[in-house]
Length: 299
Image 1 (cartoon, rainbow, N blue to C red):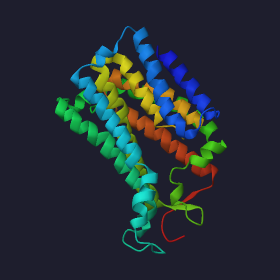
Image 2: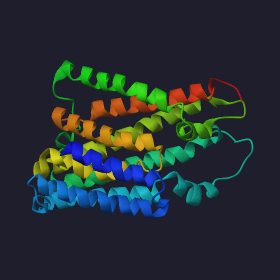
Image 3: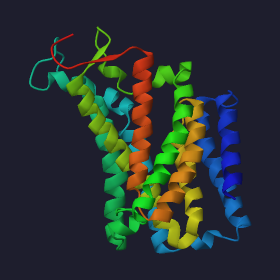
Image 4: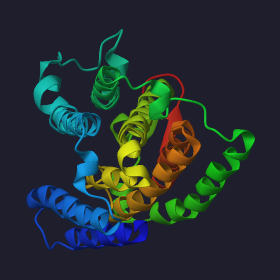
């Protein structure tokens, strides 16, 4: 069932990236196709939508839609650039005390918006439903020391694909994510880079708490492991616009991370794995583009 789900998602994502659909129409059609085949798969598995027809499951789905729509329309970098960045005073060079951090502000807006919608909304709704944080994966992974090697092996398995992708034009056009911090000497100030990395880590914390914690754990009592399929459709949607290899990789990654989270009753090792892969991608992109770090001084 999960293999069929992955195959169907891979197929319609690939068709979109081959230009069969316009960019504007693709997002809505992706969700329509995704939910349609998901309904069929759940039917084949002997499940019916009545499994979701209870107040708790409906609340989880509605909160999921609210968080995704709020973040999509209000939390992205284009919202910052359109509505907030023009309000900042224009000074050249940037003035202290916060002028040095100005290139990070847009990403800070994105990161904090992700936390607001992907952690804040589920936290409020979860409290109203009587769900404890531990029930949503906010706990130490079960299994003790034997769990860590699983995630380490996954990281080792992913790295060769990341190294290969780092040499492609699509990858180099997107990464490093900190490209806004690159100065005229092709360096990034270390203080800015570290601040950016803290914000970047927060993106993965909020992401795992939302995708695996809120959706998978929130629906597990009604759908069991099939809650992973419900999570996969919007999770892949959130990756659209990135290089096609990364979008297709999100299908496998979402499935594996969802299964591991449910198996180990925790999302935290998934956060660590996800961020480690992202940090490797940024590092490789900086190496390929010959971008250095500048510890002190002005460019």
